[in-house]
Image (cartoon, rainbow, N blue to C red; front, top):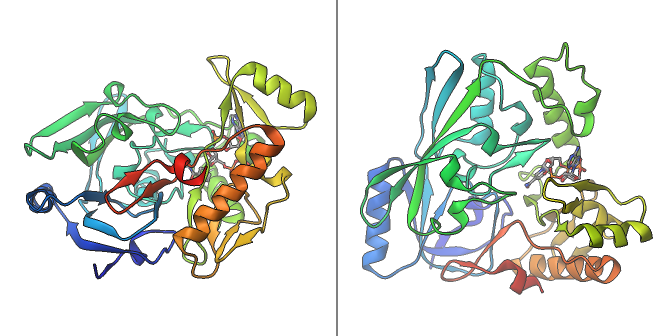
Length: 342
Ligand code: NAP
């Protein structure tokens, strides 16, 4: 158990795996999976490790997906961008903008790889991957068969998709197809973007504004390890939101199409005066309470204890029980993160 995972998770947690293999093409990925399978070892396929917390040493093979390549096909109405799963997401955003193909600018600076983007249907500033995703190419691990999953089949939801459920262990994502309509429509509903003029704004201005907001509010993983938003924004029933708003009229709340109401987890945490709270080497980020950071060689125990503390405080004050967005990885694979911090 001597292969370090420290550089392979943006939290910077010092954990180990039995084996780490870097796959640059489908065949290498399949070979690594089959070798581990022959030894009855668990497998974890990783992009840039930007949404994981390693709780323990991983008793199996970590396959680092580095399948690269960006190909563009022009259609009358849109550009089709086919990007390898191991491409850095932000690099693809920059590439498309530089080549005059807007549509991804709201999703700038999201950490991680292209292959991870459909798994949790990444989203920021009013745009989710599902808006631009055309298909996801996968390899079925047991058979080696290439399968194209259409966007509709991906069953995208809020930070959710089929790749977190039925397809989780059966398929490895090898590429993502993005469809960027030539008729660009800016999405200016969130944060500082509302100040931009929809009549004159350019994709580059949206990109710059998103980059500025993110770099001011969010910690740089190279300075303080983190995995982005640690908790999901809770979506609660309308009656529950009403009860909460009668006690806390200033609470940010966003009604959803199905009648439920999304609350801002960062605000709830902040109201409990938890910004800057530390346990061991882990802390609640001072600029954005939704992010837990590694300030001083945090262990996964520190992060779990801190997450538990945050969940308890928010639960006691608001009767809203936060759930991690970050995926927790134990010795044999993913474990139930809610149970771990409850
Ligand atoms: P913020 O502007 O402080 O707002 C807090 C939350 O309220 C956001 O998370 C967002 O929910 C929601 N919200 C804000 N304006 C909204 C609107 N006009 N309509 C509907 N919902 C609205 O958020 P922030 O923390 O700086 O993040 C900005 C964006 O980047 C958000 O979309 C956030 O999800 C995304 N982000 C994601 C991660 C991650 O790791 N997943 C990390 C950082 C930022 P939603 O999250 O549902 O959009």
